[in-house]
Amino acid sequence: MTTLAARRAQVPLRLAVTVGAVLWLVAWLLALPASTWAAFEVLGLDQASQLGQAVAFFLFDVPKVLLLLTGIVTLVSFLRSYVSPERVRRALAGRNAVVGTAAAAGFGIVTPFCSCSAVPLFIGFLEAGVPLGVTFAFLVASPMVNEVAIVLLWGLVGPQLTIAYVVAGLVVAVFAGLLIGRLGLERYVEDYVWKIRAGSVAVDFKPTLADRTRDAWRSTLDIVGRVWPYVIVGIGVGALIHGFVPTDLVVQVGGRGDPLAVPALVALGVPLYSNAAGTIPIIEALLGKGLPVGSALAFMMAITALSLPEMVILRKVMKPRLLATFAGTVAVGIVVIGYLFNWLAA
Image (tube, rainbow, N blue to C red):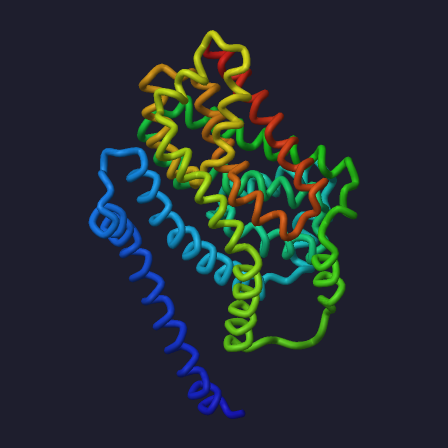
């Protein structure tokens, strides 16, 4: 095919991508007003009621999360086609456990991915030969800490708490990665993930832009088709918490005099769904009501790193024992961080 013919062949593809991107953006911008209109105008719910808030949250978060899931998985799958597995292997897998795990956690902080990208990233890392523990360090750090959250947190609560948050996130990610790496749990990764890796042989073939786009979209349809029911269930639970659990209750649960306050807040944060930036206004309000710093950090990290939607998404690539080990390890790390910062701030 000549260069001119190849360019002409790409015109329909570029048009389809452009139209799809515009429709995605329009749907994203309309999600909030549409959910508000549906909850309070169509259904006639009271905006000040707990039921109204819960329904509005659900109607907004379902399209928002599914749009994020579709958009980010497509983008990540597309970008993965440009990253050679051998390059990733050299960058991470060739280092010793501590250095590789710390590097993966640091990479997660500067990579703006949320839990929606967990499945393609998990498969991509293992496909590249990156050890399981190193992969987990990235999966913990990426949703928990990102540059947007750092900027917002710095402006709202100052540099000290921001630096403490970043350090705490790194410590939890590295701890989780090192521990899981030592346990040898590779057999608890779902079998189809290893089949994908085994099928990824090195060939002398450079895919075209059209090939990369089509493959990314097929991957997106497969992944979203597997996980969307679980995401909706997770958002439903989060909506109930959002509408019927007031912030005053969170402060009561995390009171200074209760020795079990930190693990209670971690358990309370799991059903909620938000990214790190989205939790910052909530954390600011809780700090203003007297919630201790360590308890606030633990609550924030539980929402971002242990959210129920992320757990149900990760279940598609992990067997229950590995998923439970991952969640338990991260939870223990977060609880320890909470207690430590409460003690330091006392």
